[in-house]
Length: 108
Length: 251
Image (cartoon, rainbow over all chains, first blue to last red):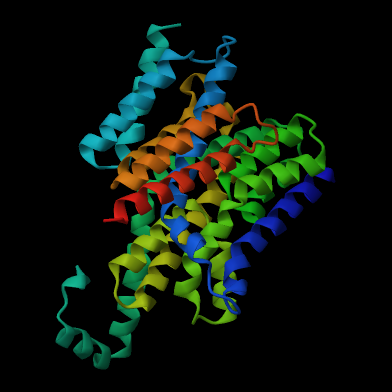
């Protein structure tokens, strides 16, 4: 029951965020700073989510529960280099995941 | 590509016949769905992982799956399921998940000028589908097409496909995905995918500084409670981007 209520509350709150600027801009223009900040919103959000997820994985796996530190770092470098070289988002996973598997098999 | 059409051809097309109009609007929807396809490679495993974690967590399976249509945001869903599983107080879970989803206000602002003239029901539906990949596809579509209506269809095509695939992936993970071997380390699929997307977007100097600041703050702020680190990192990144952008614009 608690789980349902929490998920419902987060869902309603998220929808209010989604419609917030659509409703507000009926009366007032979007503030200039907010409008310009959206240029950086997607890259910074993705960078922040990736960094926190990777750092969290690494910090929890140093206890020996996962692939250690070397493999995720190697996979990250390989993924970023592959994307920069090829210009394709596919490359991040097609190169990164095999790198992760190989590196975690080598350094256990 | 249809974007190569001359203006005369376009107007000829417009007066031609209703079927050709319907066909061109359908082709915009399909083009949007196709633009979403590369994203699905990262999103499907993420959905599977969320489904599996929801099935294994101490949360009713249907409630875990229903977070997909109700919240429709992977990071917030992960936070909700993991925090509920670890017995965190409901209020803390809600605040943490909403903090992660606060970026939706920015996405709402991104689309507001483009959707201003659309009917209310359309905006209510389109807003429900707002999330990182659909915003990226939508902005891409509006930049690609001079006719804003084509951008609308492009957005709905991409976002609609994302919605269907997301619900299916989470459902599949919750039912059948429990057998996936842990040795695959699928938990790294999403960080690697996001890192690749960031690497592909580093076009200008302000973007580079914004991303560098976001990464730095995200790592430094990890001990900050309530999973606020991503939000603080976004704020720092956007501020850095502003600063560099303004410095570069000055003569």
